[in-house]
Image (cartoon, rainbow, N blue to C red; front, side, top):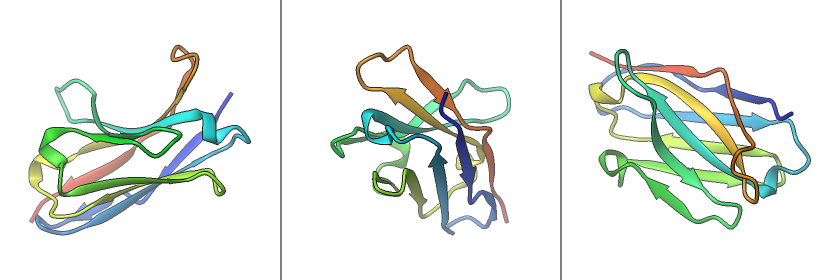
Length: 118
């Protein structure tokens, strides 16, 4: 079992920035692909950004050039830096850990609210 604890959400004005962090309780952090998902009211959960054990990244088209995902395997953390935030980025953001070799093994954090509003 891996516990994921997110932090860093909140209320920000359009154009502002937020930094989400996710801390994982596992000594095997490096074997997981880490991702950030989001879910807005009435919408399906969607993948925002992911980073592999080797550091390869992929992003939702609408956040490319604004969001950056990074990981620190020594500290068991993954960070999502969000810049130039837009109202449509408003959602609950979830951290996810997916086992590299057994994708069925994955864990979720409790979620953190991000609200972009003036």
